[in-house]
Length: 282
Ligand SMILES: N[C@@H](CCC[C@H](N)C(=O)O)C(=O)O
Image (cartoon, rainbow, N blue to C red; front, side):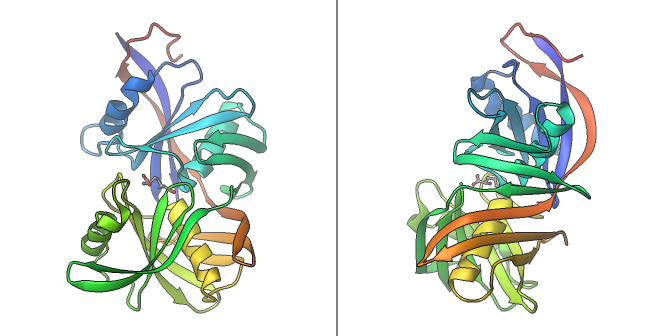
């Protein structure tokens, strides 16, 4: 059966998402991947880097479910996390301060003035430093950390010239990271404790204007390597400014906070195929 479903479109530092209130399970789990692919299509539909569903949680304000534009599931999304906080507040599902579940861990979020959102994240895991990787005939010194999803971090001299698509795609598919693959962040440390970060995103299979978990991974690795101090300032590819702060005690990373913009750009209604008989959008 076809039904009209309300959505909001949000952008968080240029990483853009379609958000749908799925507390009434209007979208069945088995339909999510195909729906993400469909709605994220920039030529034939709304267009976005991902689809994010707000779902019921037994113990927190809500649960976040994320899908990349190719339909693949993602256990976490940093820019999506700020977006869903804004969306939940706009829907009246949460107050300015809220707590929500993701499959990567529980997140405390706070809506700040001037369309900014703060996320208090769970601790990162699986740190691996200085992995030598050959990709497209070039040697890279790669650090790896999982900030909810997997991230490779590569420091480069020329962030403007680096072939993010070519090298990013090759590192993303490298056997070292199989079978899950990885997102790939190219980082340049500039003056004033600031990083420039460009990310090849798994699941979008291209460079995006920003990746929140990638910016977080880049901030953490920069602090661990002594290239920057917390709080680290980050300028995303689209020019937006974010910050990453953390506690690093004896290489145990905790208290990770990501702060940055999240904005509702428009709202609309889409016709969606669903197997469920449900309460439709108003
Ligand atoms: N854009 C996101 C990350 C989304 C998931 C990622 N593409 C993956 O599948 O690993 C962010 O802002 O963190």
